[in-house]
Amino acid sequence: MTSEILDAAQLAKLQKVDSATIANVIELFDFRSYVAGYSNLSLKAIYPKLPPAVGYAVTATFRAAYPAESGDSYGGMPELIAQAMATPAPRIVVFQDLDDPPCAATYGEIMVTTFQKFGFSGLITSGAARDIEQVDRLHFPCWASSVIVSHGYCRFPDVNVAVTVGGLQVKPGDLLHADANGIVNIPHQIAAAVAELCELYIQAEEIILQYLRGSQPTVAGYREAVLKAKQCMAELKKRARLLLESKP
Image 1 (tube, rainbow, N blue to C red):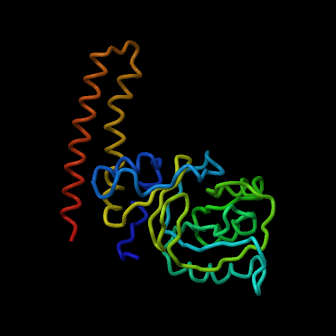
Image 2 (image 1 turned 180 degrees about the horizontal axis):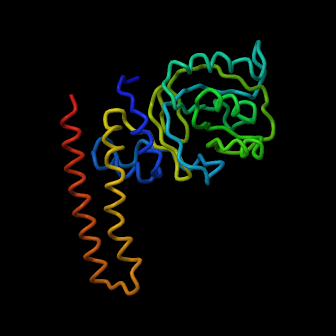
Image 3 (image 1 turned 90 degrees about the horizontal axis):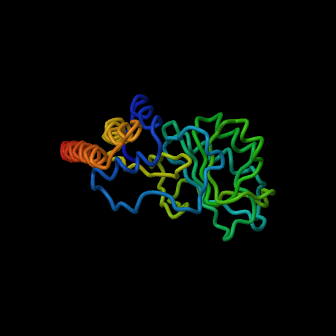
C-alpha cells in the first residue's frame, strides 16, 4: 500500500460527490482505460439512498457452501479485524465469494455492527446480503449481488489478498469510492488531485444544467452552453496533466 494517505479534508471532498463524478474526473488524467477501474452490473447498493462511502480496502475471500474442517461462522472475524487495524481509517471491507453461485449470505446484522464499531465505512461483497431491515437501521452502506436468508457455513479462507468483486480487482489498501451508481477504485497516484478537481468538474457540468433550467432554452443557446462546458473541461484536463507531471 502506498504511504500517501489522504487527509480528512481530502476524504471529505471525495465523499461530497457521487461515484459517477469520481469516474469522470479520473478520466481527465488519461491514467487508465475509460472502461476499467469500476464494478459491473452484478453488484448493487443494498441501501442506495445512503451517502457515498470512501475508504481503504480490507480484503478477504469468503466461502459458505460446505463446513470448514474447524471453526464456526464467526470464528474468523476477530483475526480479520485485528489485521484490518494496519489499514488506515476509514476502511471498506471487500469480500470475494468463492462459491459460484453464492450459497449463503456473506454478512448480516452482527457482522455489519462489528465493522461499523471498528472504523469501517462500508461493506462490499460479490456474494449475498441478509438481515436487510436490521442493517438498514445501522445506516451502514453495503453492496452485494443478491439476498439470501442463511449464513450457511461462512468463513474467510484468506485475508489481506487481492480479490475480484463485480469484475473489479481490489488489492489491500486500495482507495474505493462507492454509492448507488457503483464502486470506483481511485488510483493512489492521482487520488489527491481527483479530490481537488471534483468540485471544479461539477461547476463545468453546471454550465449546461443551469442553461437548461432556464424558461425558454433554444438549440443555439444550448450549443453555446455545451461549448463553454467543454472549454472548461479542456482546461481541467490540462490542469490534471500538470498535477500528474508535478508528482515526484
